[in-house]
Image (cartoon, rainbow, N blue to C red; front, side, top):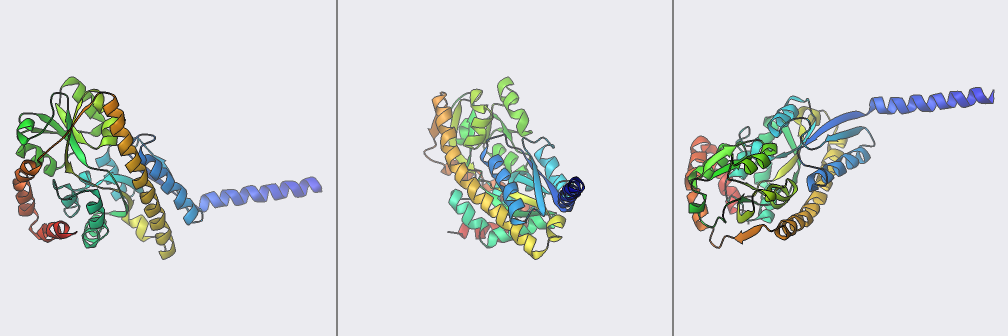
Length: 326
């Protein structure tokens, strides 16, 4: 009798566990970054927080390193609902969402703190609304630092130093326009292809932040890093709009809290990693140069802004709002 009761209780516990798993909504998430990268660690933290704050009702399995496809592919998968969650750079989202493209205008932000003040204000709401219209709801903003030029030939101090140089950029007309206005030859390509392209001379240079430059080994084949800081583009935790809208108000609050807590965690990790990455590449022999006068680079971007306004005349007020934000 005792054995039968024990077996019955064990079976009940097992069935309860199975029912719990079956009732949980198991999400899948995409991230391009490698193990140990601030975003990777923070997205795993988001998954932990999500489970805790929703009482296990929603769980998230993260797939890092771009294993579920390229960033443009993953953006479309989130839009379609094939993936629920993505950690995206707003650069590749820009061609899809005109309002989000403003953050990809060269020198639009004064510095990283200015970017977060903008995103936390009215301009950030406008950008988020534009993304939601295309099926992607931002939950929180991640730091991606400032992007600067690097190459294997020489320091870049003036626009003339970029002339004739083949420079890898993300696939966005603003970035190709930026390089073209500096006299270079823009070469859009997938991030995973950049190391080999630099090594074999398919491109002469690229542009990115300190952790990306260091973690990918790009510094091994492009030993000059020039602090142009021409782009300050945030990353986001994004969710499929249908998935988000289907949540109860209580669950929406829980998901947002989890995302925003992970963002604060990511920003702290980012600051530490940025300093460590710079120290590591300098120790490896990378030549880092501060650009004494960025005004010529900024002036060269006037045609890029005008082309943007011609294509998006209704977004001029948004640009002006960002520029007016203290």
